[in-house]
Image (tube, rainbow, N blue to C red):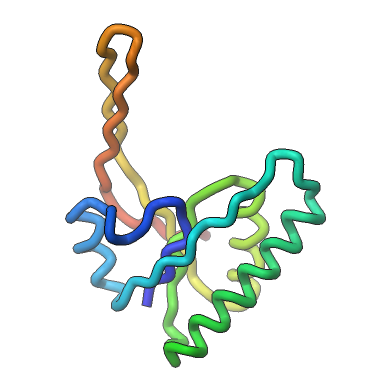
Length: 121
């Protein structure tokens, strides 16, 4: 099972990313929490502990000990959560993309093309 913790729901992923996710089995979304910019490190830590509890609950409900976490989002929360997941032996991956930027007048248009899932070490 792959638990997607990002601001990008599985249903909106590009076909290539959905195909690559099949290697992990079922994909479940867990929305990335809104991390207030004025939150203290201690508050972010509390949010990460809450996320760990939610992840463990999802794993238990689905009776799936071979879960991988797709983790993309606000950097301090990601760092704290990643370290907590690694301490529990839960593997995590990031999605990698190629970015193409074009300018249309003053409007910058960015297109992302999924390339692969890369494990966090």
